[in-house]
Image (cartoon, rainbow, N blue to C red; front, side, top):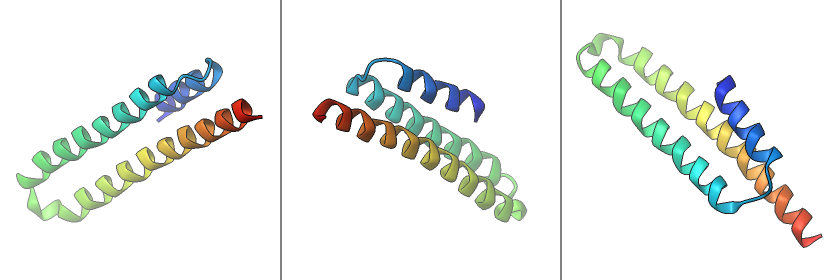
Length: 84
């Protein structure tokens, strides 16, 4: 999580470039999908722990959603600065 926060802060410090922000959002979503796939494969071999799988999946979705919200806030802030 700290690595992702660092990435987000680096984006904020750099000049506003929508393409880079879009790339970062796509990367976060891809990572989320990969984590879902990874957890799914682990859990289909261990179905008694389905509740743990659901909890871990929920936690990952929340983390990614928070990261995306932070990036969205910065996009809006930069747009407001540009539109002045």
